[in-house]
Image (cartoon, rainbow, N blue to C red; front, side):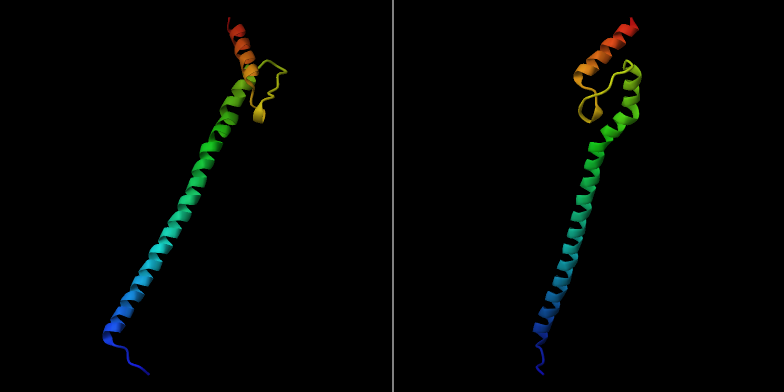
Length: 97
């Protein structure tokens, strides 16, 4: 068996320590990337879905109360079209006078 030179042994231990530290840092970077990825998904889901939720929760009942009986919403996703909104505004103005 060959005996290792003390200087070579020291260099090998330093290289091993650096490799361990490098692995630890890369693992932390990968973990942070995953957390950021899922965080962005959650934030964008909130940004895109919150207005739809708020419309259905608060604005849809108000529009339903103001709308004349028998009108249906035929716009995209059941939202009223611009022509239907104008009719609602006109009917509200007529009732207010």
